[in-house]
Length: 232
Image (tube, rainbow, N blue to C red; front, side, top):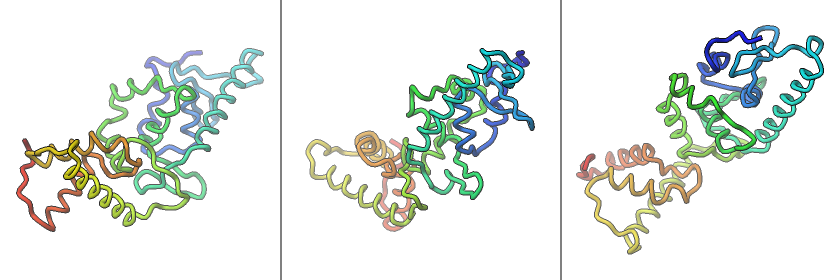
């Protein structure tokens, strides 16, 4: 029986949460979720409650098997992937660790065709998801893609030093390589050039995102003030 007026309405409470567990996420990507204290299996798009085995016929048992197989496939993809442990992205717990929902969605977008997200555009259009919030979470990782799981919390100081050395090597190359020699009229233009030319070829945690570079250049200016205009 259909009991919903708005497409994807059963998903709204989860979209309003900031953190999802592995099991919640993998279930969402099957197209179904568990609702209520009794755990009613519910179609995300239509709101249809899927009858229990004993209440349904053979076709319902087949549907349960299909959903469960899909859930297992997605769980295996998740378990076989490296996942970030960055502060603000990952919430450790001995019972149910959780990840920021935008991190999970970005991860899922790299796993087609096993995972499809037909409701993603709708969620942004209805403002249950926010692109600015998503970008802030991506900036925590310093990249568009997920970070590599090292099995421990990343050492922020070590990563920052590596990223500064990486940026310095890029600036040196831009000075001596004829391919990159160019006059920049503003700090903004320099940041945009570095991000567009170098970020995609560097590790996911390279720190070459626009906002990260703006922060680095701001810190540099505190040490040695250079009169560079912020706007062209």
